[in-house]
Image (cartoon, rainbow, N blue to C red; front, top):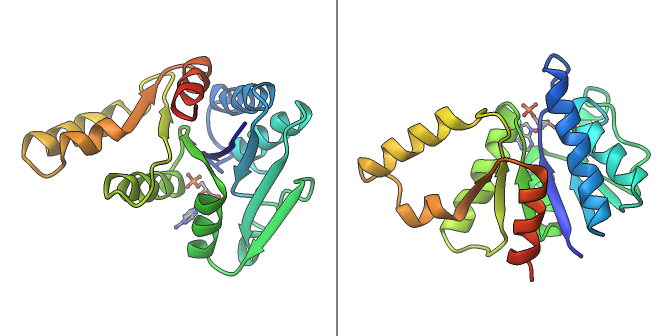
Length: 181
Ligand code: AMP
């Protein structure tokens, strides 16, 4: 039983399949007895994962900067809604409270969060698993780019191996069960 931080989109203009993916993550997270750490918004995938996790009985913690509360519609149904001053405080709180991280498809915010937690893992600052759940090749161009950087010597193979890319919700949680054992 672990605290799983999920990074995902807050955009309302995305394909419904991504929202269903977020909900499926919430369902499995709860079924496995985990708790959720999220960005504390109700919008788009962020809201979907939190609602599904709660519906399955999971404890949910949302961490939201005060100035984003109206924009991202603070998830006031969260078991714990942690209101912080800045984005940096949000990431620190989310990262400190989590035992593992799953990034779903997302935009700039998701990428920023993913890169920070992955970079710090690659520098040995923590040993928490970092997974990317990519059911449809959303992240394939990023992987190609990272692999090119590895080929040119800018990124270590070991760093790339620390970022685990999986295709299904079941694969993600089965892998977490092994890594968190
Ligand atoms: P996006 O992937 O751009 O839809 O954003 C997903 C979430 O990441 C949203 O809740 C954003 O507010 C959040 N976000 C954006 N930038 C940052 C940042 N620098 N630190 C932490 N969270 C961020």
